[in-house]
Image (cartoon, rainbow, N blue to C red; front, side):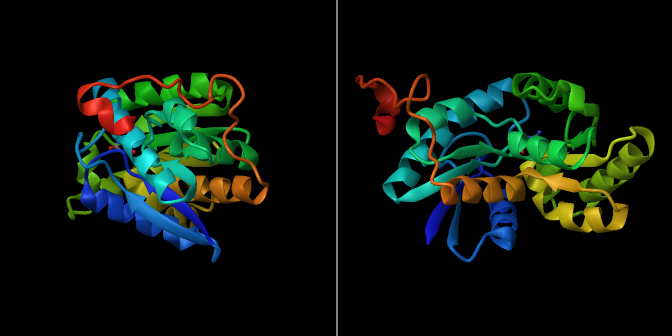
Length: 243
Ligand SMILES: NC(=O)NC1=NC(=O)NC1=O
């Protein structure tokens, strides 16, 4: 059995549950999924400020996951907050849901669209496309223009907006695949794929399978170069928990 730690970087317990259930729905019998979120931080991540706060919580959870014997880690927020810092700390593979969903889309289609939450997170998704080298694969980005936690408010409005935006993207963008741009959309991908007849990709499930693959291949995060463990030095104040 391999323990795979799935980290929801925001502090929403409801979203952590949604993410954990999605991860378990695809996990191999040899994987044990533990879904966690930071003990302190921000309830939803909707910009650079939120991501900076969340990244510290991600690092704390990586440290805890390592101590529990996690073989790999998923960062289950579409901004992939703290991804490279987490890779320095981690021994096993660390996969962000944005990179996982984008990589998966490029294996299934020549162009993909992204459907995310707020207009400002569309801009952040563009930064990630550039960072990961997928700018030319992404035909368009759409926002449902609802806050992240609307996905957990129980009204179903956000889910309906995601569905409408996915249908619109399929019609207008000439994309062969759609990437869902929020960890809280993880439970929508399977149904939308069946209804639309094209791959609608959630990064949580994609990342879990990628971590499993890397573990099965015997790979951990490279410790040669800039992802080597952090140089040892005293950490003051609240950062002492990361020592
Ligand atoms: N683009 C996003 O909606 N990012 C996210 N913010 C969160 O709190 N979770 C996400 O996946």
